[in-house]
Length: 308
Picture (spheres, rainbow, N blue to C red):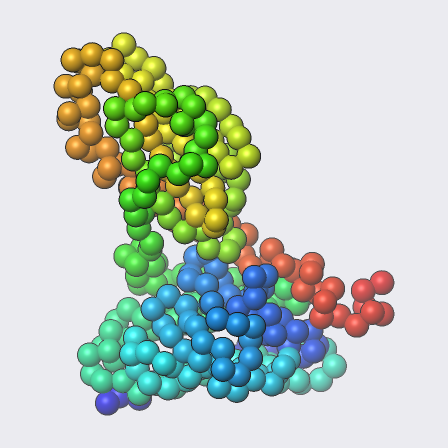
C-alpha cells in the first residue's frame, strides 16, 4: 500500500463567514465552488450534511463530518482512488482574511498509486486550485489575479474521459423535425448530458450544425438542406439537462439511395464527433461557477450593512 497526502491552501482576502457561506452551498444546484462544467460536478443524494452520499465522476464518498461555514469531510466509499478522505476547511485569520485548506489522504495499492501519479494527480491539483479561484470570484466579485492554468496532462485526461454521445430514439420534443420529415427513410439521435453551467439555449449550439437554419422553437433549433436526390433535417434539442442531435433523411430516388448507402456509414461517426467536440468547446468557454454565482454569493454571505 502507498499513502498519498495532498494539501492545497490559499489566503482569501474576505471574511471567513462570507467564504464559509460559499462552502455551505457545495453540491447545491447553485454551487459556486465546484469548477463545472469542465470537471464533473459534485452530486450528493441530499443537502450537504453528515450521511450524504455522492461523489464526482467515478470518485464516490460520504460526508462524515460537517461544521457549517467552517469544515466538511468526505470519506471514500469506492475503490476509484483508494481508501481515505478529503476535507475542506475555512480558517479565520482576522476580520477580512481567511485561509482555505483542502487536504486529501488516501491509502492505495501500487496500481492505483501509479495511476494517481500519472493521470489523476494533475487533474486533482488543477480542480482544487480552480475551486480556490471560484472562491475568490464569488467572495470578492472579481477573477483571481493569477488564474489557474490547466497543464497539458490534465487537459489530456480531460479529453480522454470526456462524456460520449449515446444513441437514443428521436425525441418527441423535436417537433420541428417531426413536422418537416414526418416519414423519414432514415432517422437517428445522439444525446449528451448538460452539467451545470452549460448553455441551455439551442441557438448557442449552432456551431454543431453548419447548414442553413430552417426553424427555431423554445428548445429546438433545426437546420437542413434540400437536393434533387435527398432532403435532410437536423435538430439540436435541449430538454431535461441533456442536449440531443437528431437527424431525419428523406430519399427521393436511386441516386439518393446509392449516395446514402455510403454517406450513412460515416454519418454516426461524424455526428458523434461534431456533438462531442461542440460539447467540450462550450464547456471550456462557459462562465466559471464562481462568476456565475458571484452576485448572489456575496449578497447571501454578507451582513446587511455590507449589502446596502
